[in-house]
Image (tube, rainbow, N blue to C red; front, side, top):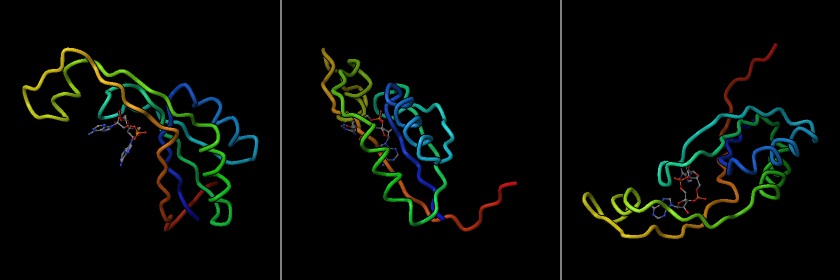
Length: 111
Ligand code: 2BA
């Protein structure tokens, strides 16, 4: 068994989790915040049998879309250029589709 941890744009959460549920995957949604943009995204936990991992990842990827997001002015400058750095305007950053991790599950209990 594997645990898929997928970080998706919060605007794609309903589409991704709906498509997973339609194919009878069990999904847990956690509201999370990206460390770089400091904006809300969603982390999905999906426990799946090994032979369904590729299908589940394909469902996630086909329902998560890339977007260009304009950052706020100061925080990303500090993260990219170092403390005290300031940009007068934000910068455009391409976010997602989906960031997907697939982890081995040692033990699963569910009653
Ligand atoms: P954020 O950390 O808010 O990052 C949003 C987007 O900003 C990223 O999109 C990437 O395009 C850009 N970005 C991140 N760090 C950067 C940096 N140091 N310099 C320039 N640009 C940077 P994605 O790569 O699609 O990531 C979307 C969200 O997925 C991230 O939101 C974060 O919450 C999560 N994520 C991505 N990779 C991760 C990883 N290796 N570990 C944990 N979470 C990750």
